[in-house]
Length: 248
Image (cartoon, rainbow, N blue to C red; front, side, top):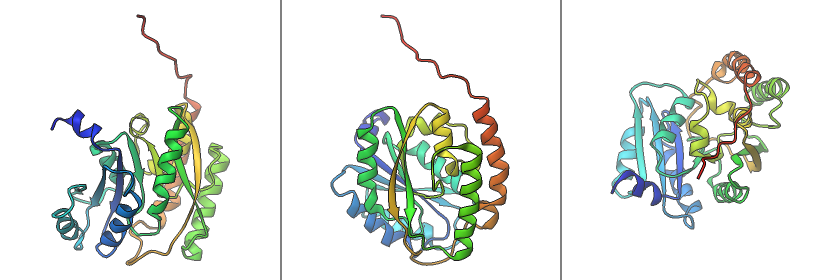
């Protein structure tokens, strides 16, 4: 099967970045499969971001009985944004969904988000999940409040919660964005920069299924301040996107 035929055969690609999530992989996969039962055919791409536990072997075992499951591997950890990008570039579908690999994002919202993206037409580039009832620790909630508050003030992207891993977007729109570390946290502002509209879905937040967070304090807050300055500069330098028509 050639690449074009393979792309047409998949309606939606779900990308799950994982780093040392051996105990969370199968429970989350079962939920994804249940959520997408009416949206077949689909694929689930796990991006193994330099895991040192049994993540790779667990995925290899699951792949033996599931043709829709794929595993991409980073030799060493490159971060969540790099993992998402690897998955998007390898995806066969034009509609992409991302969610975190720790089980906090509920896959049950995927059909609603995909339907909203399609219903709003080509002008909508991203459907962003926005968490309700956060189940993180008090310190992580504080981090998110500070980061989202500063980001909202600086970028005015109209988004309450850009840190939610549940996102549904058009592959071509994502690949047109300038890539940098922490891109996944600034997608709403950058989608607006490219002239796309945004849509939102309130989603429930759940406790982590097992294990501990693999992306820490500096990834969430202080390094983000540097990226924030860069994104604000990119937005300020944006020129009007031309409407291109070819003569017949």
